[in-house]
Image (tube, rainbow, N blue to C red; front, top):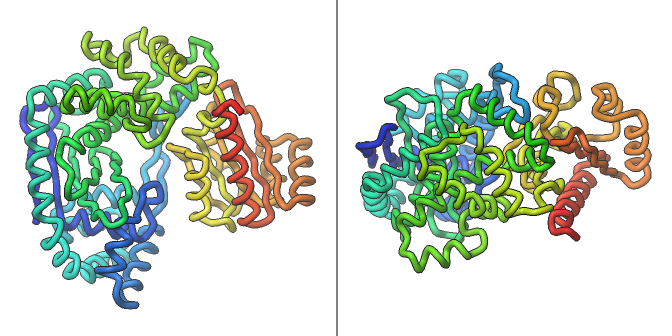
Length: 483
């Protein structure tokens, strides 16, 4: 069953999709461990009961994971250099495959989209795996998900068509100033989450497609704030380069040490203020809104982003009421003032410099370990490289952005390369080498620029590296608490 509902009246065309194929592909990605920043517990509990009953089932699941991992490749797109951070600049094949699946009405549509990105033999195997699971998945889908989803999608459409919500959507669009054609279309792909393990629902924006999970007992009002939170990420990502350059130049002109961590929190903070603040308040009864606003992590399940969203709510209320935009010359000062009032000294402590970062992990430690590093250090936006050698190509995202923070996790034999690339001085390399030889691992933190930090972890094996990453995470959290 497919529900494809256009939402009328908005300057941006909006559609809500609820597709069996999109849900199957999403669940395959979840149980394969591909979506490392999302909690797969509900899906794994469902699949162990319903769909992974034989060795053949498990073989197909492993093949799906291997095929998708094979296309975890990024293509760098030349963009205008940014003073503080690059807003975008690469296309990831695996992410584009997810976009194809989230839009797909059926397997043929998904395969057609994937075929633009994959080798023919791999497309055939991907299609075969999806076909293998279709019959049991459809039986479960019709039994549990289809009816609940139809009601939820209809309610979501009705909410999106409310004049007050349409007005908010237009206010958000005006505030961000995205470079979009008049007929631009945004798709919200709704994903039924089986409530097997009581894990939290989530949302994610992939270009113009928002992936939004919902539970069978949820109302559309419960999820609309997430839907429009993700929509705000799309608007932020669609801003023209020249507007972002001007914004970052104005931030740097303040000569404030809090500029970079504040910028690191801007995308999620604004989306939380708009989606989880403005929209929640629009649809929630006044007494419940007050309790919701006061509850910890009610805007976002990350303490720093939650704090940023709540701090920015008053600012964004005033800004959109006046029809002002991010490109107003006064916005950087107003934004920094709001963030500093909310965070105080914590804003310039090391943890928040890693909210966006370059991650280099020595190839023997593996891709899965690189995901552990990102999760432990709470890196929301990462340029990740898992390579056997440190050379100019491997570290280009780092060297091309002098205000980007970084974490390198390497074996001792990589120290000469770090020295050759001028990431370490000879004295720093000697200290790290001696510590690693004596203790099995060593860590060093460096101030790269007024706006960035670099952390080097040297370890003889992955277990030693894991201990150092844990120690770094603990130390950064202690610093943020002021202890």
